[in-house]
Image (cartoon, rainbow over all chains, first blue to last red; front, side, top):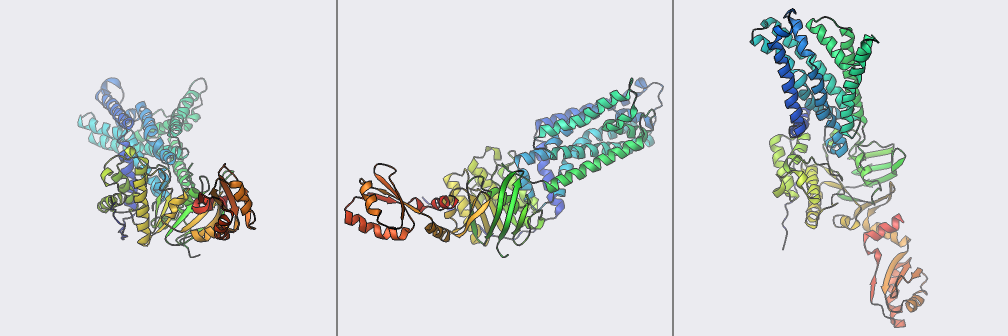
Amino acid sequence: MSISLPTYTRREMPLLGRRHRVRAIITTGLRREFKRPAVLVVIGIGVGVTIITSIVVVLFAGVFLQGQPLDLSFFFTPASNGAILFFVTLMASVVGSALIADDLQSMALTLYLSRPITEGDYLAAKAAILAPMISMIAVFPLVLTPLVAALLGSFSWTIALEAIGLSFLIGSLFTAFYTAATLALSSLTRRKSYAAAGVFALTFGLTIPAEILAGPPFNNPAVLYASPWENYLAVARAAFGATGAPIDWRWSLAILLAATAIAALATYLRMKFVEVVSG
Amino acid sequence: MTGVVEAAGISKWYGEVLGLNGFSASFGPGITGLVGPNGAGKSTLFKLLIGQLHPDQGTLRLLGENPWNNVPVKRRLGYCPEHNTLYGWLTGQQFVEALLRLDGMPRSQAEKAAEDALKLVGLSSAAQRPTRTYSRGMRQRAKLAQALAHRPEILILDEPLSGADPLARVQILRTISEFAKAGGHVLMSTHVLYEIERVTNNIVLINNGKAIASGDIRSIRALIDEHPHAVRLETPQPRQLAQALARMDHIVSLEIPEDEALLIRTRKPDAFYRELPAIVADTRLEVRSLESPDDSLDAVFRYLVG
């Protein structure tokens, strides 16, 4: 018996640019995420719950918020929905914590980085996978709420459009922060569970103690600056013109932006100098 | 520096563990085998070559350039890692295609190139199966397919035959040979010496992070002459034969490992093989068989690494 095998011939290939290579990482990543039941469940429940609660608030605005003017400040209510915090944290944990950690653990990173892509390309692609997922909870429901409110005639289109724009901006700020922070945590470990725990610690480990220390008997509102959620609320409150902010929104905005930039830079430097060591 | 790979005094530490220890070698064109036991530093050297590790000391050049974080050089190489790094949810076709697109290949061409590469390694029939269902040999072939699908100048293959079945070995070695015949360069590591012998005479022996010998297998074998060469004789009279052979001045040791065997170590194997027939004839002693553990490259390696 003889075996006939094809032979190898070399040929030159035209190669596309960086944008296409980054897109290839995104496609592969999204293909994976949308096959994971946990991701589908979090997306389904997270988006469903945040949208439904926001719409319910709109529908029953007149009942729940008697005496409160139905102006732009009303939209702080859906933006401050606690479900956003919970499901953003959950989404970042389920999707984001594995994005780099899994590649380090499986050593798929060796294959990625043996290709002509830079660490910046790799990180940009990973951020492009995570950010849309988080924004489905942090941006989409907030943008949808004023739209529905305007369609129902509860608010004027002028207010609704302004609310849509502001919702998009503050939702994007929150998305950017969680994307950068989660990728930073994911790049620090080979175990996605550690990174996921880090995301929860970042959220609730800072928010809950900060809220306790800000209230009686401690009455120290300055500690709220330590909580990403409280900083987000301060910025949202200012954006929608709602009153009663315990902390200065300018500092909160600066803290969120600085933390996002520092996390992104730290992740980039980590990837730039990471050495993929096999067993 | 003119070789495909030039390494001069490369050292790499992992904390307190030394991965490479002043490794120096020059790999020329064609196929070069990097041979050494597990933990010798082969994978570390390859990680340095593909720019994923940075040497702590020394200089390294791949195709004339420093590979550390060098994106243009990555376009010119194909890397097949030792460990399983396949995304199990992707089919073989999707896996190769995804990595081709990371090289910047258009989708339509990537599809065709992936098909061609999978055919080349004999995986066409399994191309649409998720890679998590692949056997170890199939995974090795899929990894080889992704390494050569974009037509690199140099293939860096870390233990490509590990776990491969006999047919897969034939296909992998045939593919590597064809790649080299077409003008490509191949660096291939293994800890099984005879695998390298099938495709190249050029080898670099590595142990404890150092290159202990390099060059043509024949020149490395010449080093044997500087070391005792072992010959094992099957004979019913090992003591009498040992007495007769002891007269040879190049004999280093005589040992009777079993009742009917004699193990001889000589510094002059050529002289030993020339003189042995006459001694056996003169003494009328029976010698049933003769074998030298040195006949395989394994013996060379054992000698050189002590």
